[in-house]
Image (cartoon, rainbow, N blue to C red; front, top):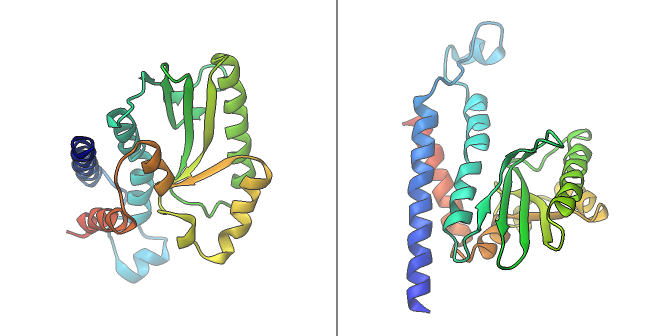
Length: 207
C-alpha cells in the first residue's frame, strides 16, 4: 500500500512538472496582443492578451490529462484521442483498457458556462461519439462523458450553474469534475493542491 501511494505521489509530481513545461511553452509562444480599436487597448495600451493565453491553456492542457491517464495505476492499452475519421469530431480524451474491456472518453471543458447553443451541441457531440464508440468497440463498456476540469468538484460552483448540470443529467450524459478524474486514475489530489497548483501556473503569466 505504501509503495502504491509513493508511486502515485510521484506520478502527480511528474504531472505537475509536465504542466509547468506546457505553461512555459505557451508563454514562450506568440500570444496575441491588444491592438487599437479595442477598449482594453484604450485603457491599458499594448499588452499580452489574457484571453489568447487562456484559450491556449485550455487546448494545451488536454495533454496534462492524457499524461495522468497514461501514468495511472492501470495504464491504458492505448490512447486514441484526436479527430475521428468517420465523425470528423475531435475526441479530446480517449483511452482503451483492453484487459477490462473499457473505453474511457471525456470531452474536456475548461469552462462550464456554455451558452444556449454550445451546451446542447456539446451534449450532442458526446452522444454521437459514444454511439460510434459502441459500434467501434463491441463488447466494451463505454465510459463516456464531459470533464469540466477548471473546477475540482460541483460544490464549488455557484447556484446559477445548477441549470447547466441539470441539462447533462436530463440528457443522461455524465458530467465529471477534476475530483472524479483523479479518482478514476487513482491519483491522490486534494482540492487545495489542485487549486494552488493552477494558481501557481497562472502566476507564471505575470512574471
